[in-house]
Picture 1: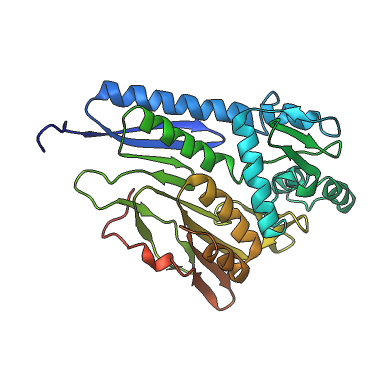
Picture 2 (picture 1 turned 90 degrees about the horizontal axis):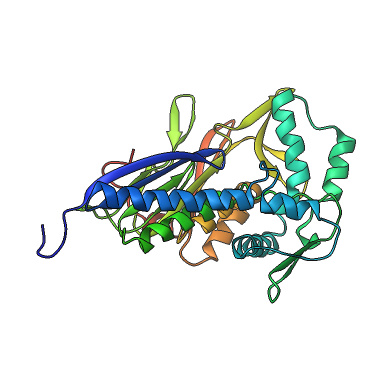
Length: 326
C-alpha cells in the first residue's frame, strides 16, 4: 500500500427500507469503522422513510396530506426540498412528472391487485385532485399548502434516489470516500474502488424473445444511475399491458414495453428523471436530458418490430466496463 494510506477492505450491508432493498458497499480500514458508518447511513434512510412514506400513516407526508385544503403547513427541510425539486421538474415537463398524482396512483395500485381497470367515475374524481399547480410552496417559511381537500402526494419516483444521496452524504461525513448505495433501481457511487477506474454498474436489460437491447453496463465515478420501466411491475387487463408508471396528465398507466436508464450527478435527479422520461417518451424525454448538464439517458422501446434503443447526446461519453458490478 502507499505510504501513509491504510489498507482498505470491502464491506457490504443490506436492509429493507421504502419497500425495497437498500444495499451499501463501502471500503474501510476495519469492520468496526465500516459497521458504524453503515448503521448511521441506514438510520438516515429510516429517518427519510418516516418523512416521505405514503404507506406509513404517521409519516410527515401523510400528516401534511391530511391537512390538504387548509392553511399552509411548515414542514421539515428534507420534505420541503423534495417537494420543491419535484415541482420544478413538474413545471419543466409540463406535468409528465407530478407528485400530486397520489389519488390516481392509488387506484392503479388497486387495479394491479384486482386485475380490473379503475372505475371511470372514481378515476375522474381522483384526477380532479391532481395537478402540481395546486401545490403551493413558501421558501421563506418552509411551508406547504395543498389547495384542494383530499390531495395525496406520492414521492415514489424521487424519494429513494434522495435517500440514496443522503446515505452517501452520511458515509462521506464518516470518512468513507469509496462507497456505493443501491436502492432498488437507483444507484449512487462515489470514488473508484481500489485499483479500478470506476464502479462497474450493470444495467438490467429489457429482453424480448431471448434478445436484449442496449448497453449492459456503465463505468461510473461520483455519479448516479437509475432505471425505470415495466419489466417487473405491470398488469395485463383485457389483453392490454399497463405499466405501474401512470401518466399524471391522463390518469392512465403507460402502455407497451419500455425501459429508461438515466445517468446524473446524483440519485435524486436520476430517479426522478427516469420516471419523467418514461412518461414523456423517447423524443421529448431525450431532448429534456440533453438540456440538463451532467445527465445522459438510454430509452428502449419494444414494439411489433422488436426492441429499439435511442440514446441522448452524452450517453456514449460513459464507457462500457469489461465486467459489470453484481
